[in-house]
Length: 394
Image 1 (cartoon, one colour):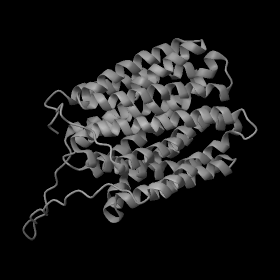
Image 2 (cartoon, rainbow, N blue to C red):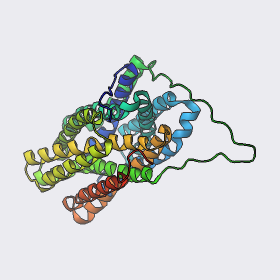
Image 3 (cartoon, rainbow, N blue to C red):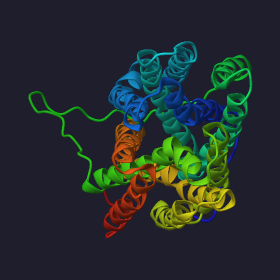
Image 4 (tube, rainbow, N blue to C red):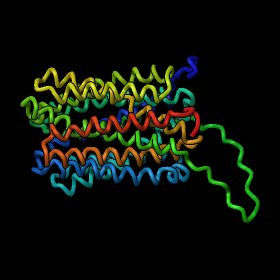
């Protein structure tokens, strides 16, 4: 790493940071809402986990469509359209009180939000060049800070006459305010590279395939996202079971985890200017394992809070560093890499919570959380194997 690399926070950067913060109010809001929604609908953990699966499947579709959408409409239009669709899904959940409506809302919000997320992340990476990994980490830190506020709001409102659904209007209001104040701001276009020389007639243009490291890092990203979403959707459930707290009060445990994530991502931005993503990822997985051990073994509120905060600290940089590494090994194809990342991440965000929920129905949530160290081990193996040669090769 070049220690002279600096991160410049201009207006386009702050726009993307705030767009990600708005995205986080939807994402972490629905994570906090899942146990409350399950209790309201009276469904099993596996059925409740289908909400995450709907988000994941639509995220995969969004990832497949992202390169074509950005070529046709540009990142700016795709980002704002994705946020509009995200809010439409949130409103469907807010006004729908049956399983078809809530599943449809999660699916619409997940696909649209995924398109917005990866379009703006690719723009942020391009805008900051060598400091792209640091910018992505810091952007996610800002986002998680918003996530802390929304999970706390869900916990408070769930125990008030307004009800937890009133918190779902936060992302809608935040998006409208951001569009009003900064709707004209966007990342300056990058210089257009010279057009490649076309091949002779009758000869197909050569395709530059992704190397094996690209696919290994994609699998690592899947494991990391599965770990994060398993905690997001089911940690409050286990927290309530282990400590005797109500579902609404246990949602504050998610706030503790997000506080650890915010601290880790702000620190991760500093580390990303000094260390390669693979080294940061391995250290983060070790911290996440220590946090999981403390949380899984704990039975008191303070110990579980500490375990969740430490888990959040470890989880914090896994997604931004994994995404930065995937873009790094994509051969100068950030939009395609972001689209592929949304597919891997979609599989992780849907598969992880669903598998944990199904295991929880069969063996109990406490036993089901043994999935976490398994995911950590698989991710660590993928990182070690992908760095066995020069990190610059694909």
